[in-house]
Image 1 (cartoon, helix red, strand yellow):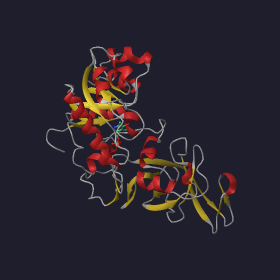
Image 2 (cartoon, rainbow, N blue to C red; image 1 turned 120 degrees about the horizontal axis):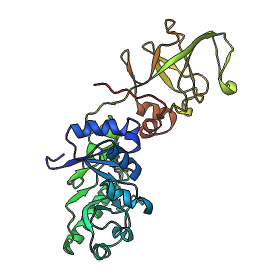
Image 3 (cartoon, helix red, strand yellow; image 1 turned 90 degrees about the vertical axis):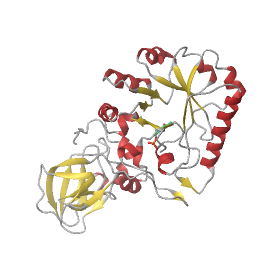
Length: 339
Ligand SMILES: *Cc1c(COP(=O)(O)O)cnc(C)c1O
């Protein structure tokens, strides 16, 4: 980024499953000035944990949460003109809908200017729909609309000191006019950048997954050829097999869609998931690793023995996206923080 560009560290959804307070503390210790969350509740949790950075609340403030915005010195993103006047004296960021058709106002510059009486407008922002996609002009159109609005507001005497558009993909795949004063990466902080589509230069971010995910083997057992494995008998052993039953299931965030498709790393080798993933348990084929025993740990996500499974690979197999895999690691999975 340009040296003047500052970073808003996005730690919503418990920092994409990584632990919002812990991640926020690390980012704050590294000197980040801003954090972003989805909800007031997430912002309050960070303040309560002692974070003193600016905290942007991106996905809306309910009427009954306005008091907490003030009390906990949160910075709301406002999505409609009628809401602007609800935060007197509090710096707010106004989101413009430049083409995502999700949150953000579609009002004209003169309507916005007329609604700003008594409003402390600190920022203007928008959000990309397809920032990693170079097969469509959608991002260029969004950038053009954003700048046209900033210019039209400036012509009416409205100047917001902070402008921001880009999340991870906007940073990783730079386009003219997208850097601005702040950027809002989330995924990149956790070590991921979405693959680009179309004629893109490579990602300018070299990041590696921050999180590894392990599960213990609860039991190891040998089954004969012909054994049906798991609910619904969806897998039939075509030969005698050694199975390891893992203490992790879809209630922990192992996607059910990995049933009979996914793989883990066990004993330094890939081990296929056999049968359906159940709520608390997943069964894998460890025929190639006879040394494994109950109590050993396997790698659901991470690197082991020169092999690697990351959230993007899991997502591909499960028919979802890496964000969904990371956010899906449930609260009952214990987090450990290591340097
Ligand atoms: C989640 C979110 C981000 C961060 O997106 P990443 O793709 O994880 O970098 C940025 N801005 C807004 C408005 C978001 O909702």
